[in-house]
Length: 385
Image (tube, rainbow, N blue to C red; front, side, top):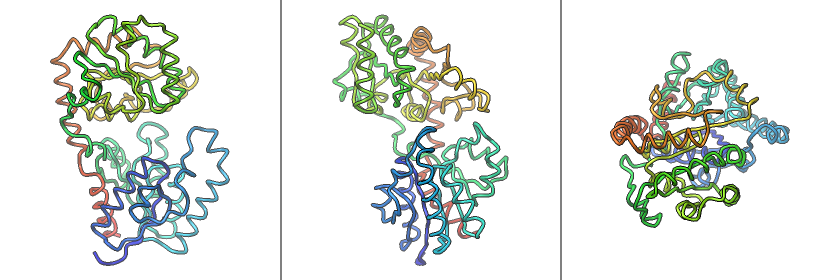
């Protein structure tokens, strides 16, 4: 289409920048003259977007940082709304960051600007009443998972399930042999241990995960444990926790700490022990049997357990609608329970094969060329509008 399509976009973190860049590229195939303005990161800017603010000004986490930055964030949002009121886009697309973007979408909706939101907030899991605001704020919700789309259909919110970009990137048959070669040619069984990417997660779960790893190495002399750290700080934290255990030299020699390379570690692994989070999706796409664990402070868990409306916490189980992989929470997270769950996978190859077949079905369902599917859904929305 030769007409100039004017698109407002706001991404608030690095993952949104990746999604936004893919969407911009796909929309340009349909609208070669399209113009994109708003907030984006380096990848979106590289695709030709004009970003009014650095993306990292929106990348705030937790409870305290957003409060400290609240005046600046409100000023940025007000300036963006004013800009789009003066120069109305054909469509505004908020990418994730719902606390920031839904407010913009709601105000633009009120003046007749078409809006879409890419990546659903976890409204299906907790604070389900937010769907009322979402229904007022967006003309279309673009979801990464099918169960999210089902939730919006139940609440009569226009929705398109576009699949997950990671499912497009990860091959249907990962090469575990090549991954093992990169790890130095591991000959026996490999267990990947991922106790989290944040300092608080590792402080809470790291000691339990490491004790389970030491126990497993004592039971399986042919086994190698690989532990990827998210960054240098987490590497040092894990190294300190490991030293405090004083494992025997023959055990310590079969534990390998890595700086990064979480996908490599999981690809090489026979079983993955991990915290609950988006990394469980990656392990599922790599067709790995896993044990998922999570632990919070007693007060946080008490509050969260009363808010969350889902039966599962691990994405593979949410996607399957059943307990395909074990989930251990709070007091259940012990070195013994973790090592027992890993041993069940190691001792039951038939069960592992069945799991991989289920994971492949889910992978294929998520593999929809997400960027192009999202661009097509937006094009159809614009044609209807």
